[in-house]
Length: 313
Image (cartoon, rainbow, N blue to C red; front, side, top):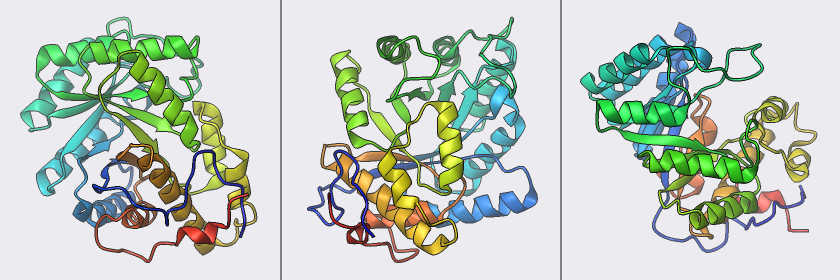
């Protein structure tokens, strides 16, 4: 199979920099008993990789608030994994948010991913709750008034869809860092050069905290394309060509997904980036195989050699 290569990408077979990369994993709270079983199978399979932390998402307008809380507390209680809770301010009063922050602290949770949050389905734009936090900076400052949490925030290499300009988006990120955030985790991307240019601009802006690239394994290309159109993440032509014709070949599709993501991480490592945040979609198979390809942990399945992707154009 031969496909155009992404800008800035290199073969996984190239020299591997040391030390081994740091990883973190994102999960979402399950809705059903079957989904809960799947999540816990995933957690147990990924736990031996010793991630720096795992996080649990918070649905639009707080729609998963209780399930997020229960999932975070159970992971913290029953595993060795440092656990972070996503928290947003959409559709919620300050008092409700503050009480949730205090509940997390009482349960021993010391890391929050502070986000403005997405508006409810069918609502075109974000509107602050009349009695709530106005935005993610306001939320972050509120969390810090309550307790000394480690706080992560979101960053957007390709610009937040609602931002007025790239410079305005970067300035807002700096406001979050200046308010006390310890790291930024990016929206997923596929073009390595896009992230490196963003990182250079952020450093020039005076943002010195870790900026961790978000990595999205391609579980389903059609769904990925649809979601990316909503969140402002571009899908390069070479990626579409890589998965073309694989709709009815799930095993080859999985192998290509592992190789693509591992090669993306390797290209970033060769640029000095050595920490990655994986959007797992509650699945261990792809994420575990990618991490193994990067030299982490025991093999759960044999990873695809990067050469299967074909020569460079």
